[in-house]
Image 1 (cartoon, helix red, strand yellow):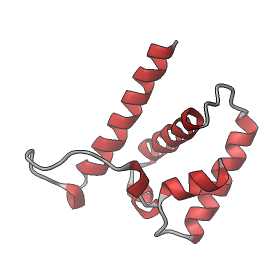
Image 2 (cartoon, one colour):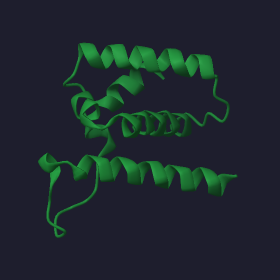
Image 3 (cartoon, helix red, strand yellow):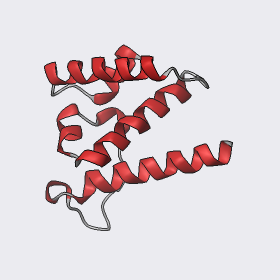
Image 4 (cartoon, one colour):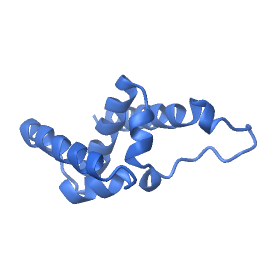
Length: 106
């Protein structure tokens, strides 16, 4: 089960990285750094990610926070409510970092 979770985390991180760097504003040489600093993704950048990839990014961040908090059981209703609060926070603070909102509400 742990290897499935690790595979899922790698897949989601790959999706985030490829999405962030595939738009023309983020085009780069192969020689440039391809790392993404998760604590520096703004909500404005998240909004530029296409629909399904945006959802996967939010799922990834929820998983990241659950891992940081050593949380192995997730309440789906509480998760939905937290997502709504995070979304509202980010709409009110579009220049804020996505990680800040997750730290605030999870």
